[in-house]
Length: 219
Image 1 (cartoon, rainbow, N blue to C red):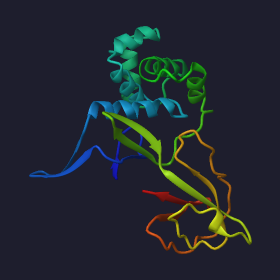
Image 2 (cartoon, one colour):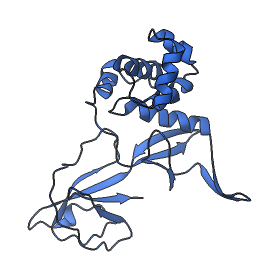
Image 3 (tube, rainbow, N blue to C red):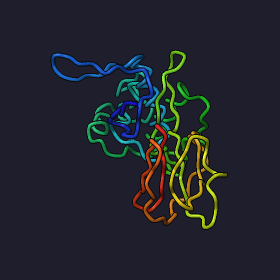
């Protein structure tokens, strides 16, 4: 698994489609179908439940093959204004945010509705997963959430009916309340108050977040 540190999103991991190299100038990484990989990331930017910044605008605009002047015409602004937005890196006006998302979705993500795009712009859509896996399959890049299991303190309850096959966590009376790969599936309760987890007796990773939620992420 390779951490794909993209300027737009820092929670991306590649499951395949990359090769780590040793060169005369030091370590390097090559990626298969890099243009399609960038478009996959752009489809995630489209879903971000936060306002688009200047560099996000530039990223989506270039994916569409539009010039600053072209986009300026769409939002009744000149190319110099668009250039200032992109250089500043701050949030762009709401109507420009919705415009670039709508243009990109119409071409590369036709299943998203205008209503769904508006929810993203208005910060009302579901947040992206904490860890997103990018997978190259059948000649194209796609994304999925990392498998995550969240444990909640449940007194006097056996874990045998909750833990999936292959898991062997020594977590006393914690029960599973969340397990999904779905990008749009149910979210775990972020207010769960838990003590520090017991030791992990499998090779998988168990972590405790600042709010006490315990998560096991399958790599």
